[in-house]
Amino acid sequence: MKLCGGEKMQVNLSATGFWKVNNSGKEYAGDLYLNKEEGGIVIYIRIPNSGAPMSYLELPLEISYIAGSTINGGEITLVNCSRISTKSKIGTEEVFGYSAQFMFSGVKFNKEEDIAFSKMTINIPGIIQWGDVSNYIKSNLEKKEDSFIDLKIIEPIEIYSNETHTVYYHLSFSDPFYFMEEEITLEQKPYLIIDSQSLQTIEWFIETAKQMKRLLEIAIGVPLSYGSISVESPDIYYEFEEGEKHIRPLEVFHSYKHTLNSELSTKRITKHDYLFNLSELKQADFSQWQEAANKMEPIIELYIESLYNQNLSVSRHFLNMVQALETYHSRRIANSLGNYKQRVEELLEIRPKAFREGDREFLLGGSKKFVTLKGCLADLMLADYRFWFHTGEFRLLEFPQVIATTRNYYTHYDQKLEDKALKDENLITAFHILRNILEFYLLKEFGFREDFIHERIRERIKPIMNSIDIRKADERKNNQK
Image (cartoon, rainbow, N blue to C red):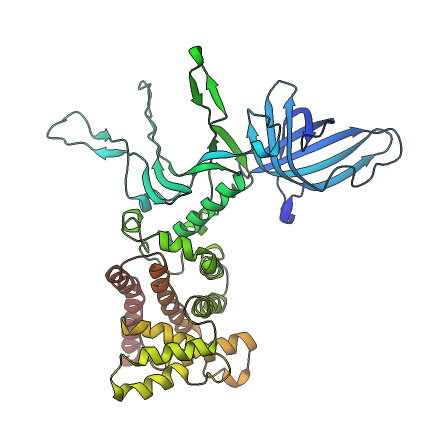
């Protein structure tokens, strides 16, 4: 069976029941198929028909939600359903197939507006080290000679809060209640908890989780996936004796559960430490990022593409990083030549008069009708004269032009530029330097303090500079033979 994107996914029959489309009065028989590992949710609605084939549009191509009951009495709601197949069995029935983004088990919503929640808990595998806390700790052997591990339950840690919602980092844990086993497994899972002040759609929660996941991918430097999801609503609860009510969490089966290749999730072009961890993020003015997130969207897309697409050529990684920096400069610093010229003059006011003409040429040289890539990079590298980027073997004043020439070569394949364009090891080094520059501005957008940004950026470029020194030493050794 082919699902969205042309990818093949094996799904297995999970339930047969009766379903209503968008709470229409008519009820249809249908079969639900699931793939729990890959998040496949497919329903086939069957309409008896002994006459001519029904219209292709007998049912909508897109259905907001399908609610129904299985023959075993279970209640299920499917949300955001898209047509994937239509089949006419002449003289017997019409079969309309749909894939769904979400499935809520144990509840049948009567109206679309009822599908709203106040809280989501979403598992993000692979971020425990980023959180830098654990429910399991080494015991104090001086006080407990018979114990090696203690349990210290970590309460949810607030990451971000505003007038509409709060995001927490939470770490669950397992506590074996039966110890007469040859093997006892202790397990803890990292989650994001999104707690909303008002009821929100499942799409709103997923979008909020997506923003946080991208932040985590930037911080950790590897692609991440979604694990289990549950939601809560004050309108969905268990009711006990004397009217006592307890919120009943709903498990959400979802199509976002993409399994990442284990090598992809751990392999990087060059291994670095985290850009920042949870405790460091708590010291930043993260609300600043929320205000800039929309404008930063295309920059983040280009940055994380390298994480998800390790098989891209070095030149493609390089071009993505150049485009990300050029886009950042346009969206966050100067969006027109007039604005840029004004910015340059303001920058030069803090410079000694002897350096102003040279700096003006460095920043504006070539920008006649528009801000050139060379100008963008020169401005970003000067960093308001508050930071000095390490450019290795490249001279700082020449680096912007070298990058512009190399970009033009790989974009247009101008043979005249071939001898001047960077290749092989030099191209890889240039990519890392450019990424180092972009990370400087990402940390700034995340609201980190200037001293933290400067120290972290210097730390992250050191492995690249060390590799350059080793390569040069190797070359000198070979030349002496």
